[in-house]
Amino acid sequence: MLTSLLIASLCCWRVTHLLHAEDGPGDVLVRLRRACGDGFFGKVLDCFYCLSLWVAAPLAYLVSRNWRRGLAMWLSISAAACLFERATSRPMSASYYEAPEEK
Image (cartoon, rainbow, N blue to C red; front, side, top):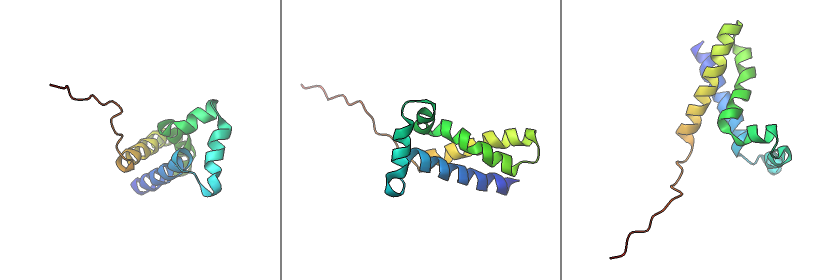
């Protein structure tokens, strides 16, 4: 079960990262995100955490034996993908800068 969780979590992170942040061959994923616009699917593709829930759902179904375990696996796979994303993403730089006071 732990191996299934790890493999499904890595798959979830990879697919979610691909759909959310990468251009894809021939910029196909950029065009997909633009085509989705500001609608529901566009907002889902803009949010890594939201998208990971959608990507984790079929993976949880594949690795679970019953609906209770499937529900727990769904949230666990998404949570692990979010942790992988935080561990591998570059830290955001501060967007606010205060100049030192002149004396």
